Image 1: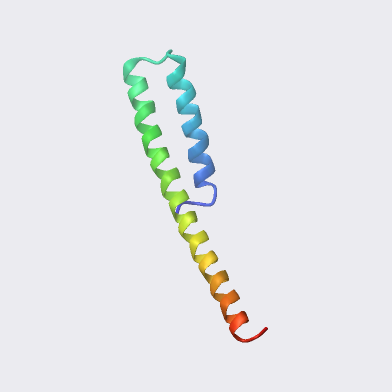
Image 2: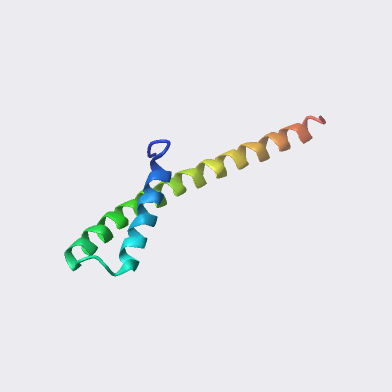
Length: 75
């Protein structure tokens, strides 16, 4: 997984890239470079969110398993 601030930093860079691209003030070459970096940042965000999603699913399964064990033990 990315660094602790990796997701937030990548999201911030992605938002800045969108603003730059929407401004229409970039040359074609600069727009392509900003877009390319944005794609990489979007991939990093997607990967980070996927890892968090998997962790949340694991935690929910563990909690469900604990609840089932408690009810089977009569507690």
